[in-house]
Image (cartoon, rainbow, N blue to C red):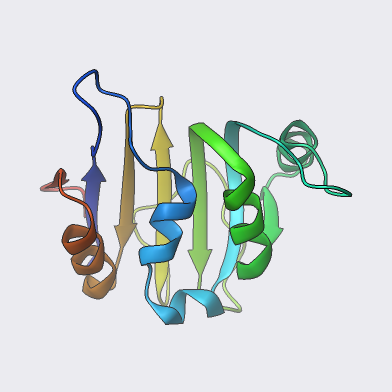
Length: 150
């Protein structure tokens, strides 16, 4: 059974004080072994020398039914160069599972993590592994466990 946690950490004027890279850093070590898919991404950021622009990544992602499949390392590289994520849907699945598509499911076979940025106002993380939710609740201050989201 999965659980969904909303993260609202922000300033007094409701500006979030964290982004994708901060969510990824809190995930447990086993998350590195998942197959990662970026199904939706609307963000701002600057490419490093020799890297694709965020717009180029968005175009690649939208041209595939199953988004853009990335390794954990590449996902972290993308997250590190983003200055603000407006909307995103990122799904990590146990290797060997069928590729996901939009909308993301609330349940997948094996271990999974679904990370969503919603309109620059909150991040939501769904997982069937309680350690993911526990780690996020300990790290961020303004969180809400969504009942019935599982």
